[in-house]
Image (cartoon, rainbow, N blue to C red; front, side, top):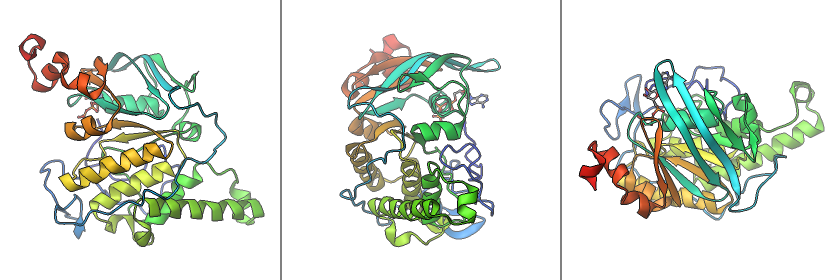
Length: 335
Ligand SMILES: Nc1ncnc2c1ncn2[C@@H]1O[C@H](COP(=O)(O)OP(=O)(O)OP(=O)(O)O)[C@@H](O)[C@H]1O
């Protein structure tokens, strides 16, 4: 389970191949209090959680942010994009994932839910190369991810955000998105040093792409602000923009609504739907049931590392095993 107090170093960040020169400042929520609009003691005056009084940034849904061609095969709408096949992952005696199988079709929004410690984040970590499964396989576009490293998986078209925001806090909003764009650029150090034409072309295209994504998110006016100075909700949106900058086929969002007030959650639902409508497939871990039920096409439920249910939001809502898992009672008592 990720440490909520951990700094935003980008250590296991699939979208951020480089570590910034200046150590990033944590942009994390106060999980101990769960309070809204709190401040980071090291940076008085900076918000770390969405403030209910804060105006919610409006997105610009008409800006074209469809994934760019990054040279990987693209499957058609409704075809299988990713498959988790009998994946088991052990941490010593802890079986974090126990023969878990499910798949994600191109163009859908799939919810991955379950009580605390169910294995959701571990599942993301297996899908993004942070961990290798003890047994089983993850197949993307029909091929096993095998021992691919995080940056290789990013290049294949899988991007993620984190439960606890991991922006480069001392870089601007624009620079954070440019890091994502750079993930699939092909020119190397020599090209950059001599500013060869191909490098200059990639640079200006990357800048345009990053600005498009910021505009889509409603953050273009804040492009030059340091990530650490952005309101909490904008930091969350910026993290999504950075993930989209890698032009993924599959976008994995790990609790994107954590710390959000109801107005922010409503806007987030609109954002997720719009992202899907622009051609992305979305895998969503989220504890907020209203949001999950309202935005997903299908839901997979984990409990103690096992898949206990899979189906439409309506099916999941009425599933006795799911109700029991959430209420902590026996299935019979829940039915
Ligand atoms: N690196 C690790 N080393 C040892 N155990 C781990 C590690 N990562 C996760 N676990 C354990 O694996 C299980 C699943 O954890 P995971 O974080 O995937 O759950 P989760 O469903 O994401 O929970 P939450 O909703 O609280 O984030 C837990 O028992 C957790 O303690």
